[in-house]
Length: 217
Image (cartoon, rainbow, N blue to C red):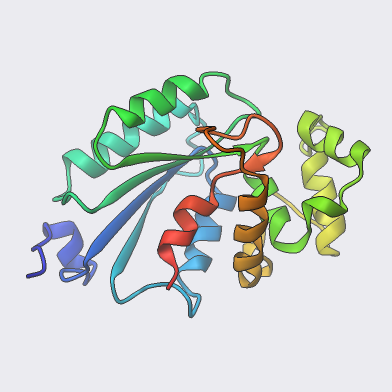
């Protein structure tokens, strides 16, 4: 028998969904927009899954992973009627924060709480939708890992991604609809880069596929 949800989920017309995923992000534009686009795909498992995104106000710049962790745990687990099969996910990057192992340990101590880490950042996950790792040169790989600033507001991966997609990439207007149609290719590429036993990619890579794969039919 389906579990009865609290007022939040009844208002969202998801009272009888079999499973709930709640996602919280380090970023506040590209990730949110991308997962909204995922929900529009034919492959999205809408019959069984309700996907809720914890949104930060655009002016909220507190994106430290521990802040994201506390927000996810408090607003999702403590305020909503979660069951044992529901999942809470943090989507975070390595390029700005060095306490990733600590965050992973915190999540492992909470039932059904998971982390999807990208190295260096979420944009590498987007890149894998349209480009194969094997096609990268050694110099490009080094530059992607370093991900240095190329201007006041852009880093190398933003510039590289814009060149490969063909019409530019802007973090404030990422237009992620250009990528989601190739999500299955991205999953394959991300799996190829994963190193056995690693809880997060120590080199160029992304574990965002781990949550995305669960959302698709």
